[in-house]
Image (cartoon, rainbow, N blue to C red; front, side):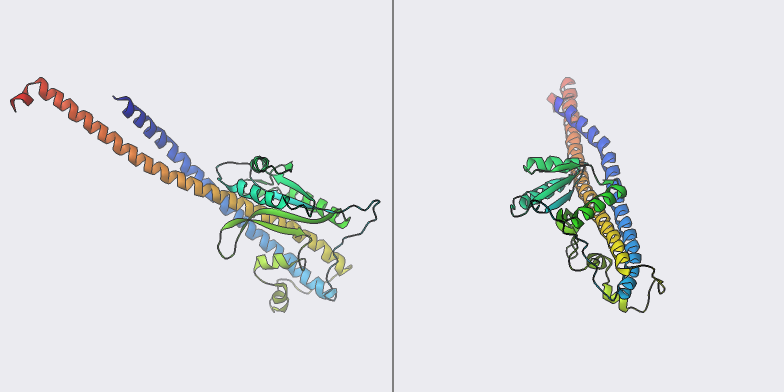
Length: 311
């Protein structure tokens, strides 16, 4: 057997062995993405309950806007509050340009010298991409395992950031992560400010649910009966605001999980198509080589029996 045919058959066998593995990884990526989206829907329903209560509390508080809670503390000399930029990346591979797009956006933001930013990088692969972009960062462990966010770690971060913001040590907390664009439906690196929230505390979550607070308050149908409020409604509203901020952070993590697995699925789908094409090409090459060998063997037999000379 010629050496070229041996190599072709070895490649053919290797590709046949890899093909089921690619299929399994594709199914796993797709199912993980779907589980993340399902958890996101569950969080939306959970936030809906808080928003119903918040609407009643705002009515009881005379529709007063909750205070930001930021306390000005004297400092000698005065310390300028810094901004936190938390980047949600990946610790797993087979995702193409996923982390590189985040790192390039982070490099653009870090080039802005007008604000002091502390960059927190969540995910080992992201940290490698940031190093290649020469971006200074503080490494952090991943915020998710499979399709499940690390709720305890995320909640602890929100509490710490909120405490520092109220103490005047932070000016804002921004999250750089993949989010789905409403118009295109594609996931793109997006900057989201979660502390303090723009406009009202509940606007971003209301948009995520698909119904504004005003529409929900004006609706005759409500999921909650008239509440009996004990205590200061403004204080209770602040507590709910903190829960909603944490929920918003969970949703961003789940968006990142879904985007990561979509990237992985598409790469694996492309790899499957390339594998199928290579298998077809190698199969044709092997068959052609076999036919060539059979023809050559027949010619040798005919020559040996002197039949070819007689013709």
